[in-house]
Every structure is written in structure tokens, then in C-alpha cells.
Length: 269
Length: 217
Image 1 (cartoon, rainbow over the protein chains, first blue to last red):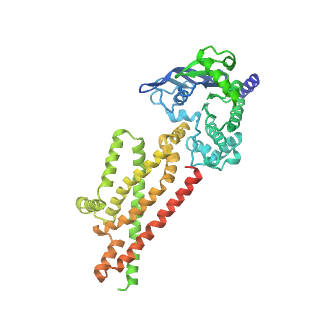
Image 2: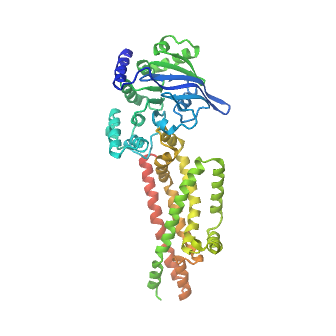
């Protein structure tokens, strides 16, 4: 399974003429400190073209804050973020332009409630990329089709189920063709029976070679698509390795304990 | 002069009352929206400044302000403050901006930071996020407050008769003096004010409730 997805990804990478060795996003010694609380502690990480990296770890360990720092939605206290080699943590960088190249999917989805599904997906095309109306509409509909939400294009978020909302959220992040998509626990706010459809959507993205950094505890999914997993605890990356490592024999005591709990929970479900 | 003539005279100045109310409402909106966002997202000194502004215009009676602007400031800056219609609309507009700023601020708080963050995550600038994400929702949230604010302005436009604007109140007063009829003019004016306020206020309120229900706000 893992090999199959990997092969597909390489082919997809070839078609857009980018090398899989290209680093899309990188952070070096990233810190985020709120007063006395250190939320993110000296994190360094690289995500390459077409790579899927997955972060997991206990809640409150700073994963979300880290992801937001990486997207420059909150400025990191110390350290650097690079997007395709461009340092975003430098004075005078147009962060709006940089953010436009990073897709972000939120745990609690946060669709614009006054806009339809189509309106949500269209907004950035119209206002950030300044595409003409017809072109924005066409593109937005195409992406909604990709996440199988075409029929619901004219519904407001309140009229959609959680899973449908999150698929629109993914479409909203995807439609600008961002360099990378950061997903912050995209399924954890959903009812268990709705996570499947979102996972299927993410699986499709993985097959197309989308570069992703995902915070998730969907372990079967992680095992299937992730190139690398990172165990995150107390604000920092404790252990990094291929999924198989974590499923068979994690080295750190904390990761071992956490995996044991997760696997127990997954079996119960 | 019979009752019908009195009614016609009063109806004739309804446009003046309506213009003062609507124009001051729009002026309040144009100033109130930026004030609310500056109060919510601005730096501490900016927030304090807006706080003082709101306190002044909500605390000082509009009658005092109108007399001050028309007779006081108008004496030194006759254009435009010596124009009674302008002075009345201006004062009520500023007062309304202080009220509307508070209404909108409540809405901004109700909508929450998340919508703003989601907007920024797409690459929208702060101003764009306010424009395309926040303001449409702020309006829907604010409809009940905006309805009562409009009603308040229609009623308070009656103060402008002390600075010589000929609107419903001034005409009513003039008829009383001319005819010595102390009842009929007021009986005509009172329901007229109700007619001018409630249909619009109620419509705003029901539209807002319907929209809120549809959007799950």
C-alpha cells in the first residue's frame, strides 16, 4: 500500500516538473513563547516536494501553535521559517503573499458562515489572486468537484454536515494551488462516522502528490500515506521516523506509551 | 385652519425629518464601522481615544451638542455649521456613530477571532478580511441594534427644531401657536413618528433573524 502511493506520487511530481528533493517549507529552531509558557520549543523541520509528513502527540503539546507559526498566522518568537528558500521571518516580507501560497485547514473548519460553499472557495481567487469572476467560479467548481462537493456548492456551511464542511475547508485551502497544505487535526472535531469521507478526500490528495504537513491521530491513514511521522510532545519533536517505526518499535518511552494508548483506542472504535 | 390642513402641513415636512434621520444614520454607519474595528483591533492609545469619543457623544445630551454646534461653533465657522439642517444631521450622525460603534463591537466579539484568522490564512490582508469576511457578518449580527438605533434617530431628529430646522416637531409647534389648538397637532405628530420608525426597525429585525437562522450564526 505504502509503495503504491509512493509511486503515484513520484509520477505526479514528474508531471509538474518539480524535483522531489526540493524543499517546500522549512523551519529552523522555531520557538513560540507566550509570557511564561513555552508553546513551541526549538523545532526544526523540512518538508520536501510531494512529501507527506505527519505530526502526532498529546493534546496541548503545541502542535497547533507550531503549525500556525509555520503558516505565519502567529509570528514565532524566535527562529526562522523558509518557504521555497525565502525567509519569511525577515523584516519587510509580504506575509499576505506568502500565506496565499500556504493552504491551511483548521480543526474547527472555520468556513466563512455568510458565504456558500462556492463563495468560500472562490473568495481567495477573487480577492487574493484577482481572477475574473467566471474564471474564479470555474476553478472553484472544479475543486469542489474534486472533493465531491459539487452538488452542495450553493449551500451555506450551516446547511452542511461536519464532514462536508471540512471537505469545503480542504477545497478552500486547495484552490489557490498552494505550495503546501498544512492540516491541523482535520478530522478530530468531527463525529466518528463523518471522518471517513474527509480521510478519503485526503487520500485522494496524497495520490495526486500534494505536499502536506498533517497533524492527525488517524493512525491507519498515517501508516498508509505518511512518508515520515513525528511525535510531538511538550512543544517539540521528540522522535522522527517512518510510520513503521512507530507502529513496531518507537524508541522514546513517551512515544511508546502514546502509541499504545492510541492503538488501544483505535481497536475499541 | 381645519385638521386636514394641519395634517397636510405636517406631512409636508416629513421628508425633512426622514432626511435628517436617514442621513445621520448613514453618517453614523460610515464612522461607526471604522471606529468599531479600530476599537477591536487597534493599539491601546487608539482604543482609549475611541473610548473617550464614545463617552462624549453618548454622554452629552444631543440638545446641548446641537446648540453648541449651531450657535457656538457656527458663530466662528458659519460654513457649514450655521446651516441648521447640516448642524442637526452632523450632531445626530456623530452621536449615532458612537452608538453604532458599540453595536458593531459587540458583533465583532460575537463573531470571534476565528473568522479573521481563516481570512488571513488565505492570504487576505487585514483590511480585506475585515471587508469581505467580517463586515457582512457584523451587519447580520447587528440588525436588532441597528433597528433601534434608527428609531432613536427618527425620534431625536425632533430636537433639531430648537435650532430652526422645520421638521415635524417644528411644524407641530408652529401650528399650535398659530391656531391655539393644543391637542390636534400633537395627536397628528405622535402616530406619524411611530409610522416612520417601526416598519423599518421591524423589517431590519426580521430580516436579520431570518438570515441568522439560515447561516446558523
